[in-house]
Image 1 (cartoon, rainbow, N blue to C red):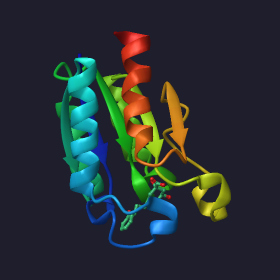
Image 2: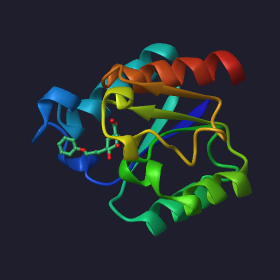
Image 3: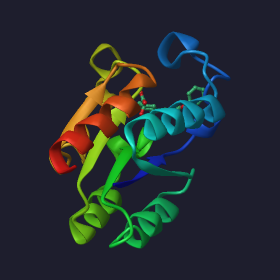
Length: 143
Ligand code: CA2
């Protein structure tokens, strides 16, 4: 099974600020953790991070017939992007949405997600472990 992990804007700076929400792991640590979990569970994994909405749309489109599933943390685009939702609706690749922080305890503008109804599941507030849980869920459902 081939899974693409997409991270949205500012997640390249993970570990540099707001440890109360995001912990102290860096983006490189996150990718290493996911890669190790993928190896242990026999999943092929690839990573994409961008600060640009269009680049994320391009990557989702390019994933068509290449990846079996996508794990995505759209970051701030969660709350704003119809374009990312439309890209998923076009390619119909199964996806799980992940958020590192517990959005239920944060600002009201973070309570809405354009993507959540498309996704098989949304994992919120489990820190970076949420990405591994998302991969397990996709393996169980689609594997
Ligand atoms: O909790 C999450 O994973 C979020 O998707 C993270 C986004 C935020 O806009 C969403 O509402 C919730 C923000 C990502 C910022 O990433 C950084 C984290 C630490 C240090 C620097 C950037």
